[in-house]
Length: 591
Image (cartoon, rainbow, N blue to C red):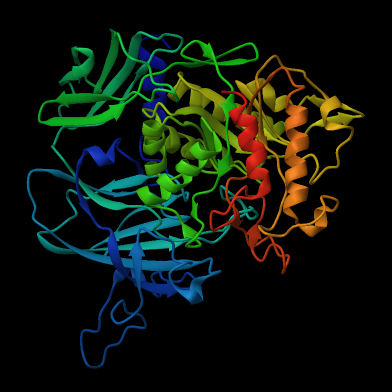
């Protein structure tokens, strides 16, 4: 993609205000922000009528005379903390899946700065109202978005209302059925972001694909006069690079660099400073090269085996959506203790705290959008929704060196529409970010005797094949695990992206019955999996399902599950099951 002209076309086509919301500016932690986190007043709107003019909660009316009344009020009602899901904060909302209205008042002194309101995520449908005016809408529960309010905010006290609706939709992403808890509400940070009139909206500073010593990227300026000089500095690497943006605000970056490369063993980060006119922004960025050659995955030109684990964005002890740096640190520390160099953030983009912390801790990341089982690929509206979520995911994390794989989907049913939709997403992803790998997890494998054949045609669109197989749990072993043969119709590396079995922590006995949910049965499944892994020459990564037991309303066994998926190597209190040690030994043997 010479000079990134292809990217500029994609950027202008897709980042120009679709679905009402504005795609988030990059690097919110590096900007001047005013936090709107904390307590928000709320109204529970079970029938979702408050967005209509009939009930009009969005107008935030109050009685004007003794003969006047309004059938709702934010005063003297419940209060919820933001960030945080609404299900875990009020007992009556535990299994609630509809609308909650949030209200926050803030004081603001107007200046010559531009002002944006930025949301880390709201699940799933979101409408935002400022001072009685509808300012925007967003669909999708796990990606950031913003609205400019420069001309809408007033001097003094302002009020922002947010409609958060978590109802499952047939044409949603994810759709009606998914195997994790549907935490609703304003689940991530809310900030006011101040910028100069002309500011650095976006940038991509990474190593050129296939190179260990050439930085290639771009900077985008937003404002009335976009043709600004741009300066990129990396003081520790003695880089001081200047270039002029064109009339559309884009400045191409291409420069040689002698860098200590980021790796899981040495997660080196550099302070990168970008300035233009009155705006300066900086953040810690690592530089590494990820590529595929034949059936090998290479990091900085050297083959690597991805020693991974899956986990959800859940704080298990709190039975709540994870959101804080402490939550992120707990999950990633458990992964490091297991011996991982890689994590799969299932099945949606997780909180940015996790991604930034993985950069520092040396953990490579598979990041995924929630194109999950049951997606209606034949629905003509689905492609635009999925593309939008891909763009918002890549937009936020494209400078995070820990991210090595963008994933398009998980366990989707084979078919012409499925293949075409995901192939288009893969093409879009490579246009937005040509430096990383593209994958998608599927579970359609052909078993004949002791032979397992990977022939899902989706693999044609992928850089890395990923298989969810669950042998020994959802499917009996077709033969002795250590004698199985895996073959592939594609000369590409394979990750076993999901495998495992359920067990209730502390439930012991013989390893002879899956239905007993014993640790010994789960342990034996893992021993058998490891025996099989050693027979697959093109296997380049494993990712057990899952690090920690997690909430799921579809898991209804009253004794062993009780609303939890029990496939965790740890229980919800962080206690290690016997299978943990099987996986840890397997990873330790590779050191």
